[in-house]
Amino acid sequence: MLEVFRIAFNTPYELKVGDPDFIGWSITASYFVAFVTCVLNAMAVRRIRPSESISRLYLFWFGLSCVVFLLGLNKQLDVQTWMITVCRTLARENGWYEQRREYQAYFIFLVVCCGAVSSAWVTYQLRSVWRECMVAIVGLAVLGTFLLVRAASLHQLDGWLAGAICGVKLRYLFELLGVATICLAACESKLRHRKPLRRK
Figure 1 (cartoon, rainbow, N blue to C red):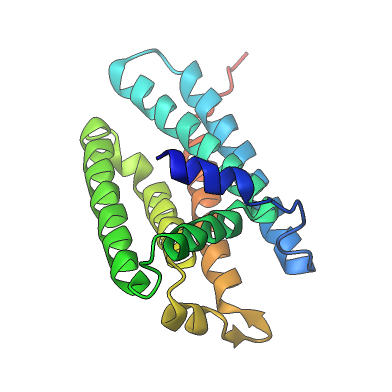
Figure 2: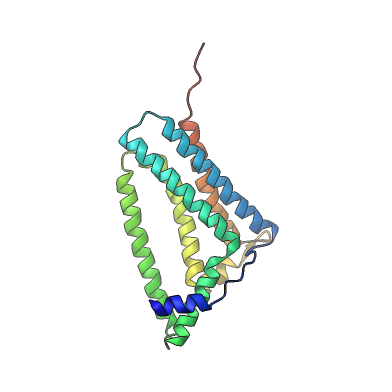
């Protein structure tokens, strides 16, 4: 563990824009739009008569807003590139860089297991209101899959994501699909929980 901290400390992080093009900034903006819609939806849920199920729904949307906010920051800060560099340096210094594919498989298996357990726990906690969260969970799963592929540096899938449709890279479309799904789910939930107008 101390060696990991030593390598991380000695690996400089270069502060630069990860995706400086128009599409990259557009996706970054979409993250923050999703963040705002999730926060507004959480506030709308909070205004409803308090109950255990509503409180869980509020915590879900508030937690999701924090996730998309951090992902929006990381979109341009590109922290995962620095983390990958740290892992490669650690592998080279400890002599298991040649077996990195095997360790990548272990990493993916561990992340998938953690994701499955976390998803099961969240689904159980939201069992009384899961229909209101299902679309957002699907969007989060799409984003999680995209981030897993990018973080694991799977060259086969990276090559596929580097392809383009109508001049737009598939990795951009895949990421935007996840963000847009969360945003639309938050907007739909916000409309469902808005206060009805009082008749005079």
